Length: 252
Image (cartoon, rainbow, N blue to C red; front, side, top):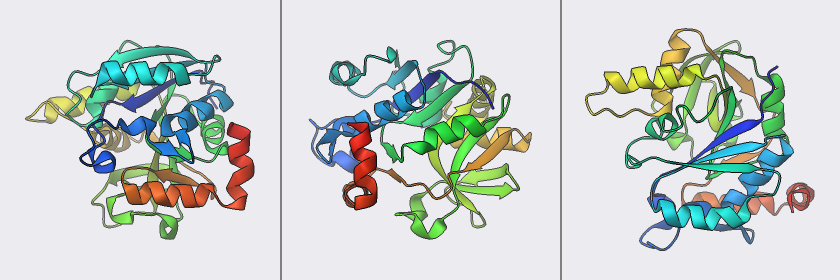
């Protein structure tokens, strides 16, 4: 177990699959049961004991920062990191945070929803000096399995990751406890690319090759990526169920 008090949120992308042709919509602020999507992420961080949060912004960065500032709870100390290459993959967004974090950190996305217990469970179960990935082994519950990030494991070790894996046992839910070494692997992945680009999965794959990635099962808790209007509708249906109501009231 490792102590984690800092987080990085990736929110640099355009979010075009969710917003469609509406250029005024910023994905992290789309309403979910009447609250901005990113508000649920911020609540989760507070409940997990996070004190400092680094927002990696890119698309419409000034407007993004202006919109998120009023939503930040008083218990979180924010900083904003601009990814000028926001049109590239998410590995480049995380690389923008090099030098901004000094210790292992919680990594998440601005467009995912999680049951309250997941982040604390991941932090409590994490090991120092390896990358810890929260995974869902309930494959039949995934909304869009074809588009999901698949994970192949051997015991608790991740051996491969990718959307196109044919053999896999779990899905990456978009929540990680990262050692600082993740930046070295992302730089390595970027250097291997002819376009100086890389995804987070590229870095994870290289770490897995060195046996430095652990899979931590979320034990049946609920989560949902909100990447399309259909995913948003699915999330709201699930959150409106009686089992979710008590959890959501705890977030308010």
